[in-house]
Length: 112
Image 1 (cartoon, one colour):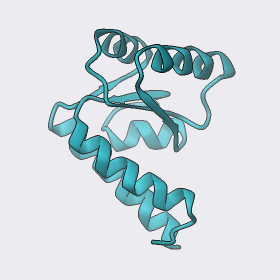
Image 2: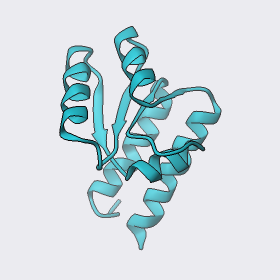
Image 3: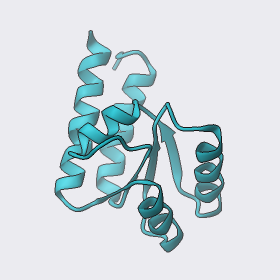
Image 4: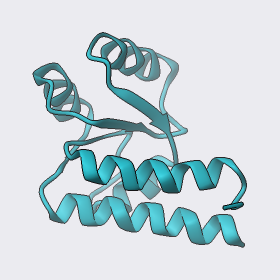
């Protein structure tokens, strides 16, 4: 139950990030943003293909950008008010810090 609440908070934060104009979504937009050096954090769906995951892992490694895997394609898309999304790129350091804090809580099973 607690983890679901944290997931909901995580997805709500992604929505705020989108509304603030600090998010790129979709493979093409995210790829361009990462290559331009504007990205603070990349979020890849747990349902991403192995090829997509490897592509973004390599790109993030070369640009020294953190990558996490979270949520389904549907959950990521719904969070940002769009259809299914496999990749999201956070363009703001402040949002990155807040999202990572919530992500770490999820990884610990909801424990503070």
